[in-house]
Image (cartoon, rainbow, N blue to C red):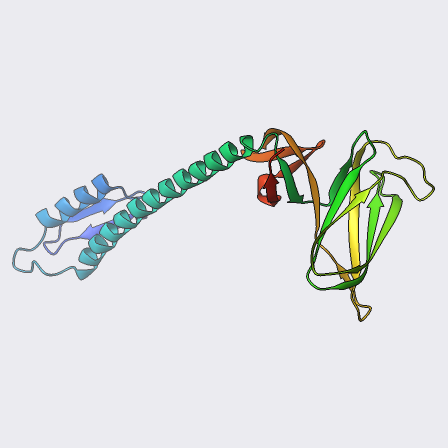
Length: 224
């Protein structure tokens, strides 16, 4: 409770003041209350309703502050617990094969990469665009007459001219066309083996084939 230069005049005529612009603590409030009671008119003990209302307000405020501190402490512990569980789970995935939501794929030294995507409905045609780190289109793969569900396409690492591309990260964009000719952008996935775990701002990131994937984006885990 905050009070600014408050002067209290008792029913007996005695004055006392609180001249502080800071928050009124519990000790200060109790001191003010005792002074108030000492100077109260014994013939009118029920007067000064405002003071009684302030007392009730102060008590409620103290209870709310204690409750807020307890809730915040509980939330902090819940966050620490969830982070600990996630970090422990992440390390247990080292050596496993995973499928995760991703807009990147890794072309390995053998010249091979898997590209995954999801179809909600049957597609007449699906075009898979592959871009290098500079944003240049390297290759477009085409698949026809695909049913709804999960699909995986293997890229042999060749560009449109048949030249073998270097190992590394490539970006993908998958566009489907339904039977009515309507275009639809599809969610894409990447597959690979978890080789390690790094932590960014306390959150676990899986190292998969040369790049990092948040643990929350993993869709499927298989034995390596």
